[in-house]
Length: 113
Length: 113
Image (cartoon, rainbow over all chains, first blue to last red; front, side, top):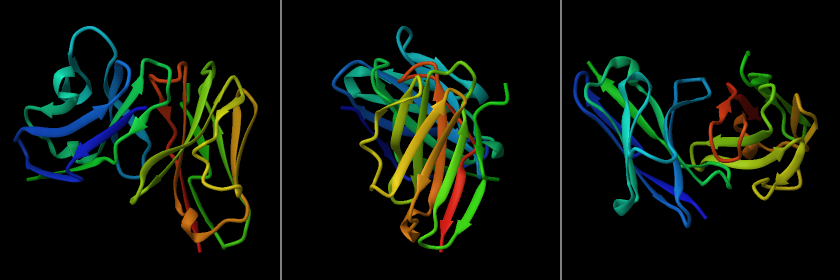
């Protein structure tokens, strides 16, 4: 079975500051890992994904995440926050294409001018 | 492609009434998922289909909930009778694979009064 824990339901950063959203996963098989973003009153949009290969994954809008197997983590980062990054972010895991995505409870990112 | 299309976007109904939510997946996607999003529980998988066949409905909360996929281009989620605790945002997603690359619809915000 797979599960995801997102540390911090709400993160607030200043515009231009580093964004760090934390995600730890549990999986009985090698995982596929994902970050989705949800803007108000919209559906979820894929930011980036890790399946196999390079452990540092780059996504849209300047975000990236690093898969660390030893730490069972997949934290999302962005060097410089922009006001338009304010949204809800969800980490998700699946077990090598065999199971549907299991989502974390989300982290709301606020960006302060 | 227009993406995953859900209707209606908003639904307000009285307790005890029947509610039907609709979803049109992306053409060619073999998998269709129904998720429910609430503040307390986050995103929960209700049911998913593969090639129009329900594969796992263990997330359906009660017998009041039912889902169908009569063909590859249409699915419904029905609640009968509806209760206030069913108030949530219901998302439909489709994909080519069970555990990767979901495309989400914009969701249906259901309010049961």
